[in-house]
Length: 150
Image (tube, rainbow, N blue to C red; front, side):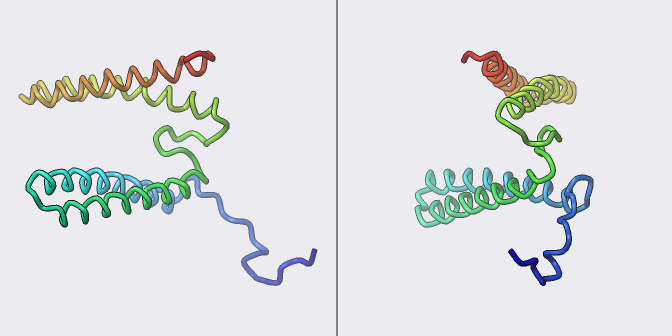
């Protein structure tokens, strides 16, 4: 096979790790994820208010944001998985990475709950505790996968 004469073909693709581009991709992923959830929520409000056209538009926006988020994540995975900072590997390694994330995040949610309560937001503290319990359950489920049984 003949070697390409295109200038770009002669150079290796740079590593994405520890670049400003990776940071921008991570910020874009967060923005797209938040926008998807928000647009979905707005669609529900529009449905409740009897605004089917607005609801449909919001649902379509939410879907587009999800597609954008998945595309951004695909690019980010060239460097590492954004939740844990670990390289993406085989399923067993990915299970281990998310198990650690959920375990660590459960502890973070407990801290957030304590802070919210201290600042007078007991309802938000309860929310953080609920999310923490859910994260701990996710960690347990993934740990069971690692041990070979679900």
